[in-house]
Length: 86
Image 1 (cartoon, rainbow, N blue to C red):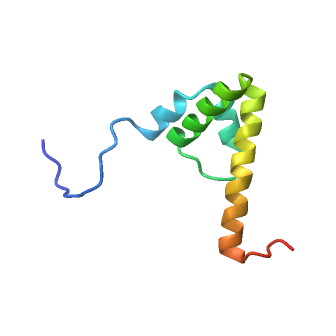
Image 2 (tube, rainbow, N blue to C red):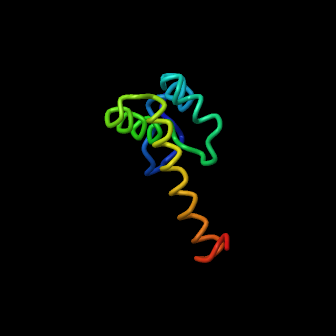
């Protein structure tokens, strides 16, 4: 049966929760406490890159935390101004 919706958006082939469920347990645990709403795909891409570079899950988690801190700092400047939080 054809869908009754016309859109230019790409259809997702896998459900978002299924992608999340396939993530490594260390990454899922980190995502539970993350301050930003990471997608499973972007978090997994960053996790694989950090794990390949450092080889240790603890170091990969630290790399994710640094990446999130950079994103939060960038967003804070655009939301509250350059001088925030001073």
